[in-house]
Length: 370
Ligand SMILES: Cc1cc2nc3c(=O)[nH]c(=O)nc-3n(C[C@H](O)[C@H](O)[C@H](O)COP(=O)(O)OP(=O)(O)OC[C@H]3O[C@@H](n4cnc5c(N)ncnc54)[C@H](O)[C@@H]3O)c2cc1C
Image (cartoon, rainbow, N blue to C red; front, side, top):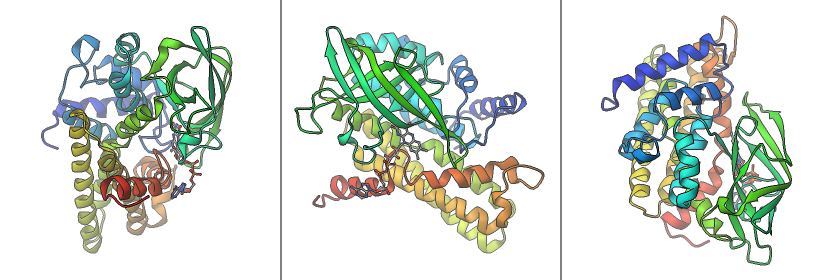
């Protein structure tokens, strides 16, 4: 990664140190799962947010592949990135792609300075992999939509300002056709957030929505045309370069203590991670060209998930049970290896399950029948 400016590394290291000094918990999951509003605001202050966005919206018009390379380094340095990954990499980019001029100018400049944080409200008790079965309903009432339903697994719900939410706007249409995506104010009357702790060490929100009003101008794309918006934003989400960075950090830690036969396994894993990195760059290039990309973004997401799980298993093989000690003098790398191990299990589900990625690759990449 010699072509990523050294100052990003220095800046990220300094912020990690500052967060540790503030007593922030950097091991509540891997960097992709853990969150800090303070870190997000610092990123905004430093101009790290929206580097690829237009200058008039607060960005720097950087090449999208350079942005992805920078995200890899942020993961490598264990910055708590959940807010950034949702608000910037996924939702910010989707608002730019699908939002009206009004939505873009109302939201993007505030995201670029770290002032607005989003969460993503897709999953529901009866809708995970089969997202098109979601039941949260939005009913038109004059110049607003009235939203009722429950969202679960909502990362960062307790600290987010807005939810990027998928709702059913026309129950009479076929499942995929009656959906819309809109921006819902998390501080509006009728929004209730319960926080649940996870085995991964982090938290999830369960968000209950009772008669929550959403301005009609807050819809992304066409009303009832939400499926296209959802697929587009999942493509951004599934380019997971930050996880390549975290996994490379693990490999670097293990390399320092590994015996020669383990070094060979680590070398093979480095090769896999290099392939993941290139897949991420390829998906990013295709998205920037406006091409259909799901087969590549799903390959990217699946391969990073499997590589993370391989790195986690290798950490136990090389270090023994010590790799799983979370705190105290025996914790390796201040508990980060244990946090990584826990978080790697959730990669089977987060961002769409491994089975679903295989399905997308089979159907859209290989042209196999449904
Ligand atoms: C760390 C983490 C963070 C998350 N953050 C968010 C968030 O911020 N916002 C949000 O909306 N959601 C979030 N999720 C939820 C995530 O998107 C869902 O867990 C995922 O889509 C799977 O849905 P499910 O859990 O309901 O499992 P299910 O859909 O019930 O699947 C259960 C099992 O069945 C398999 N399966 C299901 N359907 C098929 C099929 N057609 N073919 C083959 N196998 C199938 C799955 O692969 C899985 O193994 C998060 C999840 C995790 C773990």
